Amino acid sequence: MRIVQIIDSLEAGGAERMAVNYANALSKEIEFSGLVVSRKEGLLLNQIDKKVSYLFLNKKTKIDFKAVFKLRQYLKNNNVDAIHAHSSSFFIAVLVKLTLPKIKIIWHDHYGISQDLSSRKNVSLKLGSFFFMGIISVNSALKEWAKSYLWSSNITYFPNFVIDSSVSGEKINLNGFEGKRIICVANLRAQKNHDLVLDAANLMKNKFPDWSFHLFGKDFQDSYSDRLKKKIDDLKLHDTVFFYGTTDTVGSALKQCQIAVLPSISEGLPLAILEYGMYKLPVVATNVGEVSKIITSDNEGIIVESNDLNSFVNAIEKLINDQNYGDRIALALHHNVQLKFSESTIIKEYLLWLKSLTTFTA
Image (cartoon, rainbow, N blue to C red; front, top):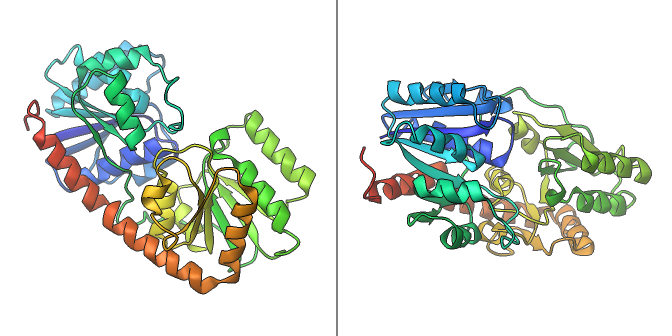
Protein backbone atom coordinates (compact mmCIF):
# COMPACT_ATOMS: atom_id res chain seq x y z
CA MET A 1 0.00 0.00 0.00
CA ARG A 2 1.05 3.57 -0.70
CA ILE A 3 -0.82 6.02 1.52
CA VAL A 4 -0.48 9.77 2.12
CA GLN A 5 -1.87 11.66 5.11
CA ILE A 6 -3.15 15.20 4.45
CA ILE A 7 -3.65 17.79 7.18
CA ASP A 8 -4.09 21.57 7.05
CA SER A 9 -1.35 22.46 9.53
CA LEU A 10 1.29 21.08 11.86
CA GLU A 11 0.24 23.05 14.90
CA ALA A 12 -0.02 21.03 18.10
CA GLY A 13 -3.69 19.99 17.92
CA GLY A 14 -5.23 16.55 18.22
CA ALA A 15 -6.02 16.06 14.52
CA GLU A 16 -2.59 17.30 13.52
CA ARG A 17 -0.84 14.98 15.92
CA MET A 18 -2.86 12.01 14.72
CA ALA A 19 -1.93 12.76 11.10
CA VAL A 20 1.74 12.67 12.12
CA ASN A 21 1.18 9.53 14.23
CA TYR A 22 -0.45 7.70 11.30
CA ALA A 23 2.28 8.75 8.86
CA ASN A 24 5.05 7.69 11.25
CA ALA A 25 3.41 4.38 12.19
CA LEU A 26 2.61 3.43 8.59
CA SER A 27 6.19 4.12 7.49
CA LYS A 28 7.11 0.91 9.35
CA GLU A 29 4.28 -1.16 7.89
CA ILE A 30 3.65 -0.26 4.23
CA GLU A 31 5.59 0.38 1.05
CA PHE A 32 5.15 4.16 1.07
CA SER A 33 3.94 6.56 3.76
CA GLY A 34 3.69 10.27 3.08
CA LEU A 35 2.51 13.38 4.90
CA VAL A 36 1.20 16.45 3.09
CA VAL A 37 0.55 19.73 4.89
CA SER A 38 -1.64 22.09 2.93
CA ARG A 39 -1.66 25.44 4.71
CA LYS A 40 0.72 25.97 7.63
CA GLU A 41 3.71 24.24 9.17
CA GLY A 42 4.34 24.19 12.92
CA LEU A 43 5.90 22.52 15.95
CA LEU A 44 4.95 19.01 14.85
CA LEU A 45 7.29 19.26 11.87
CA ASN A 46 10.06 18.10 14.22
CA GLN A 47 8.16 14.90 15.03
CA ILE A 48 7.91 13.51 11.50
CA ASP A 49 9.92 10.32 11.05
CA LYS A 50 12.74 10.41 8.52
CA LYS A 51 11.16 7.50 6.64
CA VAL A 52 8.03 9.57 5.93
CA SER A 53 7.87 11.43 2.62
CA TYR A 54 6.93 15.06 3.35
CA LEU A 55 5.39 17.81 1.22
CA PHE A 56 4.26 21.33 2.15
CA LEU A 57 1.78 22.85 -0.30
CA ASN A 58 1.72 26.40 1.10
CA LYS A 59 -1.93 26.73 0.15
CA LYS A 60 -3.03 30.40 0.13
CA THR A 61 -6.77 30.30 -0.55
CA LYS A 62 -9.58 27.77 -0.18
CA ILE A 63 -9.37 26.87 -3.86
CA ASP A 64 -5.69 27.19 -4.74
CA PHE A 65 -5.11 25.53 -8.12
CA LYS A 66 -1.34 25.79 -7.78
CA ALA A 67 -1.51 23.75 -4.56
CA VAL A 68 -3.94 21.26 -6.12
CA PHE A 69 -1.66 20.54 -9.07
CA LYS A 70 1.41 20.41 -6.85
CA LEU A 71 -0.37 17.73 -4.83
CA ARG A 72 -1.49 15.95 -8.00
CA GLN A 73 2.08 15.76 -9.28
CA TYR A 74 3.33 14.46 -5.93
CA LEU A 75 0.69 11.71 -5.88
CA LYS A 76 1.53 10.68 -9.45
CA ASN A 77 5.29 10.72 -8.90
CA ASN A 78 4.95 8.46 -5.87
CA ASN A 79 2.24 6.16 -7.28
CA VAL A 80 0.03 6.83 -4.29
CA ASP A 81 -3.02 4.58 -3.87
CA ALA A 82 -4.95 6.47 -1.24
CA ILE A 83 -5.22 9.82 0.50
CA HIS A 84 -6.02 9.74 4.20
CA ALA A 85 -7.49 13.23 4.70
CA HIS A 86 -7.87 14.59 8.21
CA SER A 87 -10.63 17.03 9.17
CA SER A 88 -11.11 19.92 6.71
CA SER A 89 -8.30 18.76 4.41
CA PHE A 90 -10.91 16.59 2.69
CA PHE A 91 -11.61 19.57 0.43
CA ILE A 92 -8.27 19.61 -1.39
CA ALA A 93 -8.33 15.80 -1.49
CA VAL A 94 -11.63 15.91 -3.38
CA LEU A 95 -10.34 18.60 -5.75
CA VAL A 96 -7.30 16.51 -6.66
CA LYS A 97 -9.46 13.40 -7.10
CA LEU A 98 -11.41 15.23 -9.78
CA THR A 99 -8.15 15.33 -11.77
CA LEU A 100 -6.96 11.86 -10.64
CA PRO A 101 -10.10 9.66 -10.53
CA LYS A 102 -8.18 6.53 -9.52
CA ILE A 103 -6.97 8.05 -6.25
CA LYS A 104 -8.95 6.86 -3.22
CA ILE A 105 -9.92 9.03 -0.26
CA ILE A 106 -10.27 8.04 3.38
CA TRP A 107 -11.70 10.84 5.49
CA HIS A 108 -10.87 11.05 9.21
CA ASP A 109 -13.36 12.94 11.37
CA HIS A 110 -11.75 14.50 14.46
CA TYR A 111 -14.63 16.82 15.34
CA GLY A 112 -14.25 17.68 19.02
CA ILE A 113 -17.63 19.19 19.87
CA SER A 114 -19.48 15.88 19.83
CA GLN A 115 -21.95 16.53 22.66
CA ASP A 116 -24.55 17.97 20.26
CA LEU A 117 -24.17 16.96 16.63
CA SER A 118 -27.72 17.78 15.56
CA SER A 119 -26.71 21.27 14.45
CA ARG A 120 -23.57 20.16 12.62
CA LYS A 121 -24.21 20.89 8.95
CA ASN A 122 -21.57 21.12 6.25
CA VAL A 123 -22.76 21.08 2.68
CA SER A 124 -19.29 20.87 1.12
CA LEU A 125 -18.44 17.91 3.37
CA LYS A 126 -21.68 16.15 2.47
CA LEU A 127 -21.00 16.62 -1.24
CA GLY A 128 -17.38 15.60 -0.78
CA SER A 129 -18.38 12.41 1.02
CA PHE A 130 -19.69 11.09 -2.30
CA PHE A 131 -16.00 10.63 -3.24
CA PHE A 132 -14.91 8.96 0.03
CA MET A 133 -13.93 5.31 -0.08
CA GLY A 134 -14.33 5.18 3.69
CA ILE A 135 -14.74 7.30 6.80
CA ILE A 136 -12.97 6.98 10.15
CA SER A 137 -14.66 8.53 13.19
CA VAL A 138 -12.78 9.05 16.45
CA ASN A 139 -15.83 8.25 18.58
CA SER A 140 -19.09 6.36 18.27
CA ALA A 141 -21.24 9.53 18.22
CA LEU A 142 -19.39 10.80 15.16
CA LYS A 143 -19.77 7.41 13.52
CA GLU A 144 -23.55 7.51 13.95
CA TRP A 145 -23.64 11.10 12.70
CA ALA A 146 -21.67 10.13 9.57
CA LYS A 147 -24.07 7.24 8.90
CA SER A 148 -27.06 9.57 9.05
CA TYR A 149 -25.64 12.61 7.25
CA LEU A 150 -22.88 11.63 4.83
CA TRP A 151 -22.88 9.61 1.61
CA SER A 152 -20.54 6.74 2.40
CA SER A 153 -21.27 3.13 3.21
CA ASN A 154 -17.86 2.30 4.70
CA ILE A 155 -17.83 4.03 8.08
CA THR A 156 -15.76 2.77 10.99
CA TYR A 157 -14.60 3.86 14.42
CA PHE A 158 -10.95 3.95 15.42
CA PRO A 159 -9.86 5.62 18.64
CA ASN A 160 -6.87 7.90 18.72
CA PHE A 161 -3.62 6.24 19.67
CA VAL A 162 -0.34 7.23 21.23
CA ILE A 163 3.04 6.51 19.76
CA ASP A 164 5.01 3.68 21.32
CA SER A 165 7.91 5.88 22.36
CA SER A 166 8.14 9.58 23.04
CA VAL A 167 10.01 11.85 20.66
CA SER A 168 13.15 13.11 22.30
CA GLY A 169 13.43 16.81 22.86
CA GLU A 170 15.00 19.36 25.15
CA LYS A 171 13.91 19.31 28.77
CA ILE A 172 11.47 22.04 29.67
CA ASN A 173 11.93 23.65 33.07
CA LEU A 174 8.67 23.90 34.98
CA ASN A 175 7.84 26.44 37.64
CA GLY A 176 6.63 25.44 41.08
CA PHE A 177 7.88 22.91 43.59
CA GLU A 178 9.25 19.55 42.51
CA GLY A 179 6.90 16.68 43.29
CA LYS A 180 3.88 18.97 43.63
CA ARG A 181 2.74 19.75 40.10
CA ILE A 182 -0.58 19.25 38.30
CA ILE A 183 -0.65 19.37 34.49
CA CYS A 184 -3.38 20.12 31.96
CA VAL A 185 -2.68 19.66 28.23
CA ALA A 186 -5.40 21.41 26.21
CA ASN A 187 -5.41 24.21 23.66
CA LEU A 188 -6.96 27.43 24.93
CA ARG A 189 -10.45 26.93 23.55
CA ALA A 190 -13.74 27.46 25.36
CA GLN A 191 -14.70 23.78 25.09
CA LYS A 192 -11.62 22.87 27.16
CA ASN A 193 -13.05 24.84 30.11
CA HIS A 194 -9.84 26.08 31.75
CA ASP A 195 -12.07 28.05 34.13
CA LEU A 196 -12.61 24.85 36.07
CA VAL A 197 -8.84 24.54 36.61
CA LEU A 198 -8.52 28.18 37.67
CA ASP A 199 -11.45 27.88 40.07
CA ALA A 200 -9.93 24.71 41.53
CA ALA A 201 -6.55 26.41 41.92
CA ASN A 202 -8.24 29.29 43.72
CA LEU A 203 -10.00 26.97 46.18
CA MET A 204 -6.86 24.91 46.83
CA LYS A 205 -4.14 27.56 47.02
CA ASN A 206 -4.43 28.13 50.79
CA LYS A 207 -4.85 24.49 51.76
CA PHE A 208 -2.09 23.26 49.43
CA PRO A 209 0.13 26.33 48.89
CA ASP A 210 3.07 24.31 47.50
CA TRP A 211 1.02 22.69 44.71
CA SER A 212 0.79 24.35 41.31
CA PHE A 213 -1.05 23.94 37.99
CA HIS A 214 0.81 23.83 34.65
CA LEU A 215 -1.19 24.50 31.49
CA PHE A 216 0.07 23.53 28.04
CA GLY A 217 -1.72 24.32 24.78
CA LYS A 218 -1.95 26.80 21.96
CA ASP A 219 -2.83 30.35 22.98
CA PHE A 220 -4.99 31.86 20.23
CA GLN A 221 -4.64 35.35 21.71
CA ASP A 222 -8.41 35.80 21.64
CA SER A 223 -11.12 36.89 24.06
CA TYR A 224 -11.11 33.50 25.79
CA SER A 225 -7.39 33.73 26.40
CA ASP A 226 -7.67 37.34 27.58
CA ARG A 227 -10.43 36.43 30.02
CA LEU A 228 -8.39 33.58 31.52
CA LYS A 229 -5.37 35.82 32.02
CA LYS A 230 -7.53 38.49 33.65
CA LYS A 231 -9.00 35.85 35.94
CA ILE A 232 -5.51 34.84 37.05
CA ASP A 233 -4.81 38.49 37.82
CA ASP A 234 -8.09 38.97 39.69
CA LEU A 235 -7.67 35.80 41.77
CA LYS A 236 -3.92 36.40 42.33
CA LEU A 237 -2.94 33.00 40.96
CA HIS A 238 0.42 33.99 39.46
CA ASP A 239 2.31 31.70 41.84
CA THR A 240 -0.18 28.85 41.42
CA VAL A 241 -1.09 28.66 37.71
CA PHE A 242 1.45 28.78 34.88
CA PHE A 243 0.82 28.94 31.11
CA TYR A 244 3.49 27.57 28.75
CA GLY A 245 1.81 27.69 25.33
CA THR A 246 2.56 24.99 22.77
CA THR A 247 5.67 22.85 22.92
CA ASP A 248 7.12 19.80 21.24
CA THR A 249 8.57 18.69 24.59
CA VAL A 250 5.32 18.02 26.45
CA GLY A 251 6.67 14.58 27.36
CA SER A 252 9.35 16.29 29.41
CA ALA A 253 6.67 18.27 31.23
CA LEU A 254 4.55 15.17 31.90
CA LYS A 255 7.55 13.45 33.49
CA GLN A 256 7.86 16.33 35.97
CA CYS A 257 4.21 16.27 37.08
CA GLN A 258 2.37 14.15 39.64
CA ILE A 259 -1.29 14.59 38.63
CA ALA A 260 -2.98 15.25 35.26
CA VAL A 261 -6.38 16.83 34.64
CA LEU A 262 -8.71 17.44 31.71
CA PRO A 263 -11.63 19.79 32.56
CA SER A 264 -13.42 19.87 29.17
CA ILE A 265 -17.11 20.43 28.57
CA SER A 266 -16.85 18.67 25.20
CA GLU A 267 -14.43 16.13 23.72
CA GLY A 268 -14.07 13.43 21.13
CA LEU A 269 -11.58 10.84 22.31
CA PRO A 270 -8.95 13.02 23.98
CA LEU A 271 -5.36 12.34 23.06
CA ALA A 272 -4.27 14.13 26.23
CA ILE A 273 -5.64 11.36 28.47
CA LEU A 274 -3.87 8.73 26.38
CA GLU A 275 -0.62 10.64 26.89
CA TYR A 276 -1.29 10.96 30.61
CA GLY A 277 -1.71 7.21 30.73
CA MET A 278 1.42 6.57 28.71
CA TYR A 279 3.42 8.61 31.24
CA LYS A 280 1.78 6.82 34.20
CA LEU A 281 0.03 9.85 35.69
CA PRO A 282 -3.14 9.60 37.81
CA VAL A 283 -5.95 11.44 36.02
CA VAL A 284 -8.96 13.54 36.94
CA ALA A 285 -11.20 14.18 33.92
CA THR A 286 -14.73 15.28 33.18
CA ASN A 287 -17.34 12.84 31.91
CA VAL A 288 -17.58 14.02 28.30
CA GLY A 289 -17.09 12.45 24.89
CA GLU A 290 -15.38 9.08 25.07
CA VAL A 291 -13.38 9.72 28.23
CA SER A 292 -15.16 6.81 29.92
CA LYS A 293 -13.90 4.46 27.17
CA ILE A 294 -10.34 5.23 28.26
CA ILE A 295 -10.91 5.50 32.01
CA THR A 296 -13.31 2.59 32.34
CA SER A 297 -13.53 2.44 36.15
CA ASP A 298 -12.43 4.12 39.37
CA ASN A 299 -9.44 1.79 39.29
CA GLU A 300 -8.02 3.62 36.25
CA GLY A 301 -8.76 7.25 37.08
CA ILE A 302 -11.32 9.65 38.50
CA ILE A 303 -14.17 10.93 36.32
CA VAL A 304 -16.38 13.78 37.51
CA GLU A 305 -19.30 15.50 35.86
CA SER A 306 -18.55 18.49 33.67
CA ASN A 307 -18.34 21.80 35.57
CA ASP A 308 -18.73 20.09 38.96
CA LEU A 309 -16.14 22.16 40.79
CA ASN A 310 -16.50 20.50 44.20
CA SER A 311 -16.08 16.98 42.80
CA PHE A 312 -13.16 18.14 40.65
CA VAL A 313 -11.36 19.66 43.65
CA ASN A 314 -12.15 16.69 45.90
CA ALA A 315 -10.70 14.29 43.31
CA ILE A 316 -7.46 16.26 43.04
CA GLU A 317 -7.18 16.50 46.81
CA LYS A 318 -7.71 12.74 47.10
CA LEU A 319 -4.74 12.16 44.80
CA ILE A 320 -2.61 14.65 46.72
CA ASN A 321 -3.42 12.99 50.04
CA ASP A 322 -3.16 9.37 48.89
CA GLN A 323 -0.15 8.86 46.64
CA ASN A 324 -0.43 5.08 46.79
CA TYR A 325 -3.94 5.26 45.34
CA GLY A 326 -2.67 7.60 42.63
CA ASP A 327 0.14 5.22 41.75
CA ARG A 328 -2.30 2.29 41.47
CA ILE A 329 -4.77 3.99 39.15
CA ALA A 330 -1.95 5.48 37.08
CA LEU A 331 -0.45 2.05 36.48
CA ALA A 332 -3.86 0.57 35.62
CA LEU A 333 -4.55 3.36 33.12
CA HIS A 334 -1.11 2.84 31.61
CA HIS A 335 -1.86 -0.84 31.01
CA ASN A 336 -5.25 -0.02 29.49
CA VAL A 337 -3.74 2.53 27.12
CA GLN A 338 -1.05 0.09 26.02
CA LEU A 339 -3.62 -2.64 25.44
CA LYS A 340 -6.35 -0.69 23.60
CA PHE A 341 -4.84 2.57 22.35
CA SER A 342 -1.32 1.73 21.27
CA GLU A 343 0.17 2.36 17.85
CA SER A 344 0.51 -1.36 17.07
CA THR A 345 -3.10 -2.18 18.02
CA ILE A 346 -4.78 0.58 16.02
CA ILE A 347 -2.54 0.37 12.94
CA LYS A 348 -3.16 -3.37 12.69
CA GLU A 349 -6.93 -2.79 12.75
CA TYR A 350 -6.60 0.11 10.31
CA LEU A 351 -4.73 -1.95 7.72
CA LEU A 352 -7.19 -4.85 8.07
CA TRP A 353 -10.07 -2.42 7.50
CA LEU A 354 -8.44 -0.98 4.38
CA LYS A 355 -7.90 -4.47 2.97
CA SER A 356 -11.52 -5.32 3.67
CA LEU A 357 -12.78 -2.53 1.42
CA THR A 358 -13.60 -4.13 -1.91
CA THR A 359 -12.77 -0.94 -3.77
CA PHE A 360 -9.23 -0.82 -2.41
CA THR A 361 -6.41 -2.25 -4.50
CA ALA A 362 -2.85 -2.09 -3.27
